Amino acid sequence: QKQPFQKPTNQDMGIKKTDAGPPIVVISDGCVIDDSLRYCKQSREWVEKIAQTEGGGIKHIFLMTVDPLGNYNVILKEP
Image 1 (cartoon, one colour):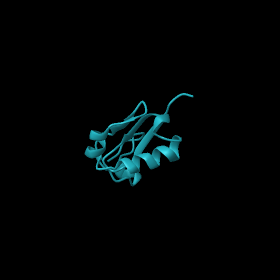
Image 2: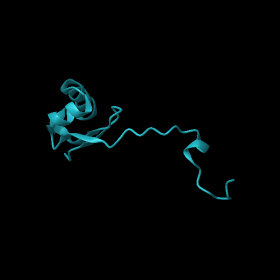
Image 3: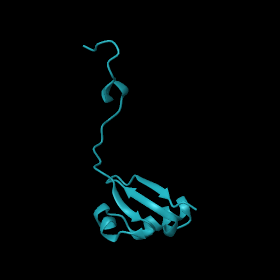
Image 4: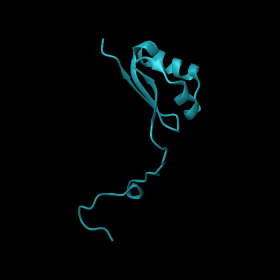
């Protein structure tokens, strides 16, 4: 039984837990890390398409990470 003011659990919120694993760096300071792409099972073309959409190309990205589910985060370089 829950106590008053206890934090809700994922089950309480209707959230299914997915343990995707940690994100992997695939672009660092405008350079693609090919070993990371292979580990994430993603292609260079996939990364180039995202880089173009998010920031105008790979050379404009400071950091891009990808998790095992294919979710990505992009941080652009400062202008």
